[in-house]
Image (cartoon, rainbow, N blue to C red):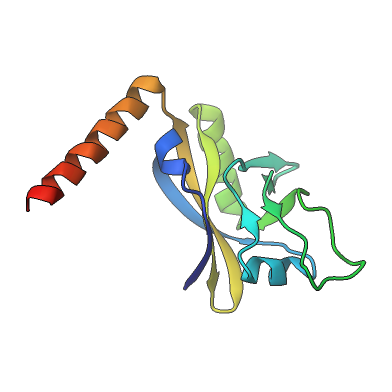
Length: 144
């Protein structure tokens, strides 16, 4: 498994409760651009349109050696999930105030996959506590 893009701010801004793996529908040179790690998923999220999952605000830079077939950088891209997974995720989003956030994009058996996390937003106090815990771990590693 080769990791292409990681959402570094996801664990700081959200508490991740569950994860799912989904395929992603890409066009032409987007795959080449992802291979060269020219993408960002920091501000992206997943939404449902007509019982289909789409990733919004995923930025894939145009491929340098591409031609006129380069597509829009910030277009919405369809995620490939089973129907029962889509229904389960839609029910969880409606029941709780949960957001679907992409955590990382990676290669798996010559296919590009997206790891999706069920995320609940943190408030300012929770973020401060995360910073304190991280600093405490760093200090304890320093002494051992």
